[in-house]
Structure formats: C-alpha cells, structure tokens
Image (cartoon, rainbow, N blue to C red):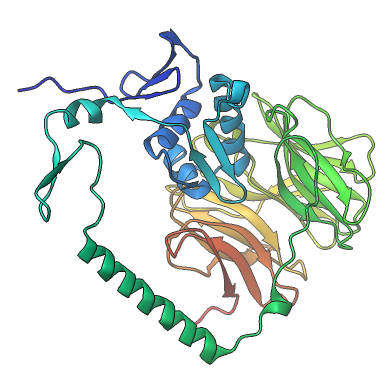
Length: 407
C-alpha cells in the first residue's frame, strides 16, 4: 500500500496544507482565523472559476444564518494576509454582486505527483498527451460541435423573432450610488424614497458603520463611529430615525439614532448573535412606529424567536414560539397595515419556510413548504403577496408568495 498523500496547494510564494490547516509563505506560517482559512481553501480548491456568494456561505457556514458582510470581511482578511494587490500580485478577484474567483496560478501537489505515473491517451488519435492536460478535439468532433451550436443559435433566433419582444424601454439603467471606501451592503430606502441608509465596511473592510445618503445629491453621512459592528438599518415610518444593531464580542444591542445625525439611544440588549449567527439578521419597524421586531432568544440553548421592542418604553415581549428542536425564527417583516408579521422559520440554517402570524398573537401559519434557503422578505404595497429570495431552483432567485393559503 502506498502512503496517503496530504492535499497541498502552491501559489506564488505560498503553500496551503489542507490536512494540517497551515498557510506558509516561504516556509513561514501565516496566521489565519479558522473561517478565513476555510474560505481560502474553498477558493483555492475552485481556482479559476467564479464561486457564487451563496455557495461560499453554505460551504463555510453550513446550517448557520450569516450576512454577506461576514464573507467580505473574511475576504479582506485573506487579501491582507496574502499581500493581494502589493507589487502587482493578484490572488482574489471580486465579481460585483456575484462572488469571487481565485485567479492566481495554483499547483496541486498531490495531483502533480499522481499524474507523473501515467499519461492521458487520446483513443481517436493514439497519441499521448502530457499528464494533467486534455487533448484538443479532433476535426470530426469540432465539426459536430459547430453544427450543434449553429442549430442552437438558429433556434434562439426563431424564438426571438416569434415573440417580437420590444424590451429596449424595459432595460434597467445602472447608476453608481455610493463612493464610500470599502464595501457597502444592506441598503434601506427611506419612507419618502429620497434617501438610502446602508452599511459601510470602511477602508480596511473591518469596521461596519451606518451611513445615509440622498439619492440625487451630496456625500454619504456617517451616523455611527464605533469600533463595534453596526448592521441592519431600519427606517422609522416618519423617516426621522434609524434603528440598527450594534454587536460587540460580548453582546448585541438595538439602538436608535436620528437620521440627520445626533445622540444614539439604546433600546435593549438582544442575545444569541455572537455565538450562533455571527451577524444580526434583520430589524423591522412597525407602520405605526411603536414597535421594532427582531430575532432574539433568552439563552444559547433555545431556538430564536421574534420579539417586539417598544420604541417608547423599551419593553420587550416574545411574539413567536418556534419548535424546541428547530433553529428558530428570524427575518421579520410587517404587513403594510401592521397587523401581520411574516418571518422565516428554519429546521436548520438552510432548510427554511415562510410563516405569518397576527401581531396581536395567535397561531403561526405556514406559507411555503419546500424547505429551501430563504431570505429578504418584503410585502407588496397591497399586502397580498410576500416577495423573497429562495434557493428552491438550485441558486438564490427572487420569488413571491400569495398570503392566501390554498386549502
């Protein structure tokens, strides 16, 4: 029997040892957090191809609810450790709104050693190709491929010609909005539609703060300036305040700050984010301005529930009661009339469905039954449907669900 080989990768001056979980540069160890190492390994293993954010989130944080900012902050840490961008070196490419690609040339040490024992043979030509390479197509195969592609192109042409869709007036126009250093995420429109609040990561990508900006003029106003992470901006119905979650290593708290800047006010502490979720999920402000809904729990051994926080008295009451063996409830969204709350309930961090229940209390009603990954709930203005993102088609896409449950 041959001795099993450790899976190692080399790129530039670096060696990545998957079994020993080591990153070495010219023989010296480079320190990485466990999640940053897992993320780097996932990208290196998939080197040369675009890896969607959703695939990375489910690979690095399985059965866990995290925000994309977790991904971007770890990417920033990896880039800093690799010296990405220094002296012309490029390792990780960001594909906006999609994911990341490891672009440096990677040598798989185990694969190279195994490949030295044999060469790939082209059965049609009887010639031997170098190990680790694939011989180009024969002339017959290329001709068949050209004919097949021609047929596909002709079929698409006929389809477009028959439908005669005039889409020029429907084409979206992409307009750059923010110019804050670092990454921006979690945008939230003000009630009058004239401003957007968002989370900015800062120049180093590791200090998330709340910003607000007019749509058509001016620079972004930074509302928070704490070394802790601030996320989940939510506008009050009158547009005067923003609620957000501030998270430290010890706890997470819900705060309110004037939208034009000013002193903050802490409403209450919320538990469970640091250990299990990593990032707070979402805040929702009731249409009457009296309540904030947030995922919460009283101890680390129980599932998350949706709690309502009084903006005036700071009182907090538990609204939902998920099954004890579930991951819990999160991502609350008030209906336009404020009488119903939609939320996500998950058996795990990946298998999830949408529920709704009266804000006054009562039974939770299940609306979806596919146990797919879901996020970003939003009600239509008439309160008849809920828009959400779902992985039910294999990747995360936008879908909608009528609130009228079929019998």
